[in-house]
Image (cartoon, rainbow, N blue to C red; front, side):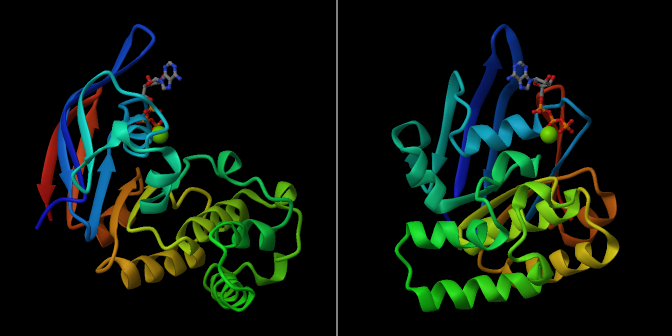
Length: 220
Ligand SMILES: Nc1ncnc2c1ncn2[C@@H]1O[C@H](COP(=O)(O)OP(=O)(O)OP(=O)(O)O)[C@@H](O)[C@H]1O
Ligand SMILES: [Mg+2]
């Protein structure tokens, strides 16, 4: 099977700081990979490089065999759904419903389809009671659930979730687990996390970064 993402000898610096050092990794289009490691080890940076948000200097990144550097951001965004570590960076629409519907409206989906899918997400992520609330005033856990639901609604072929369980209580973490179990056979998932129990529950492979290098990469 060809890999969905291939990273070859990739290094990334910001200013004079070497953040990612000679990374070689590949990710299939199915299954659940966790990326862990200490604060500042480069996990978020790696997620941003793969989604084209952050430029890298050496090596290459291929998405379904295509050179990432030749792809426009919207083209990458149609394939890869990316949950930011901080949901405040993600949420921009004035209300919960508008945030959920935005991507589908952009893709010219029918009103009926938008209603059906947003309704499904309102239930799965327990957002129905706050569907008309102003996004800005939501609690941290509510923002996190909204950001996750909005990313999932776009039906990406590959998902990068940067610390998706942050701020979620036990029940809402369980809801997220159930949903990820449902999609993991169809979508490749790369989850960045420090949450050991969530990692152990879901991963079929765990990668660890330390100081910008891959120090561990094993199937579970
Ligand atoms: N824009 C930037 N300019 C300079 N340094 C940066 C920038 N963004 C990140 N860094 C540095 O790069 C390193 C890796 O940061 P990154 O956010 O990728 O870590 P992380 O592994 O996601 O950590 P955490 O577990 O805290 O989320 C850190 O030392 C950070 O200070
Ligand atoms: Mg991070």
